[in-house]
Length: 338
Image 1 (spheres, helix red, strand yellow):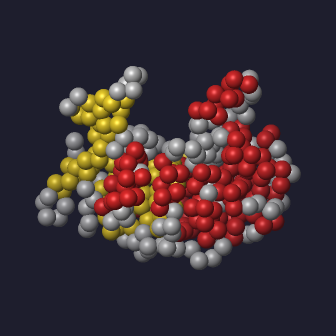
Image 2 (cartoon, helix red, strand yellow):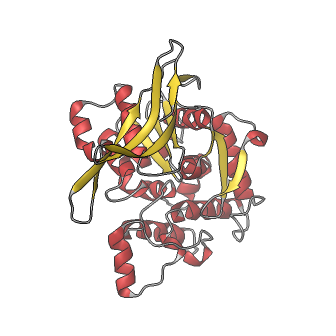
Image 3 (cartoon, one colour):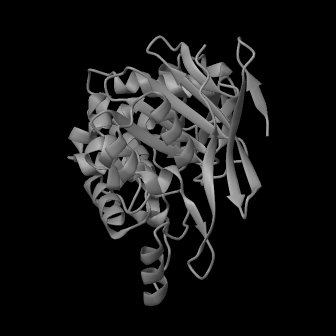
């Protein structure tokens, strides 16, 4: 395992480890940035300046034009629907219903979504589709809420909806400008790629992503609606049994949170006091809850009762097909406080 030395020479591990039968079977290297409202790094693990793609952690910022320019009010989009616009949802009936409602309100349909299809994340929802022989359309894509929001923005601005996922479309140009604004980065400094759902994704330093979440959490203008929608409807932002849902159900009075693909996860204080962004270097999802909860505990944000309610995520066990516990996943790092 890789060690990180602080200024006093003490070594700090920066890993999440998987143990089975008394040995370390796998190691997931961790990078963490914790920042204050000025964007200063107040705690870290690994490389807080590592360039990472925000992936779906950018969704709250992609919703900003919808509230700042009254698009949600123009089309009568409610708080649950705003939450699903920020979501990487599980494709459960409640998520599909919300996205269909948005599309109906803006006068479009599933055929206008350009995110492509994939089966629902939630197992029961996927089984039901297969059992009924239903086609898996783009509305089940975990990003369909975001795409519905982008279509709403295009219609409100009088922009064509076809090709709204392309980098040169006004919708995506606006998305790039929002990421620039919230990270305090020049647009030319943001690395651009293509996300899994076809739209532009943004590469920024981990600390910049943390800063963006800190800023959004401290927003006192209309953007407060985004944070409120997420913490009021955490089941719409993720889904049944998922970590992001459980985290905001328990700590939604203090934080809001959003997952991203490839081991990215970000948290902001609902009072704008701090922002946290993490990256699991090998992209695995199973390490992210362990890291986030360890970081929150190190920042004295987890009470013992709160820790107990999230215990299944902080120290998950590994079971075999017989249901026997055969291993465990645990954190093996300490935050470095500069």
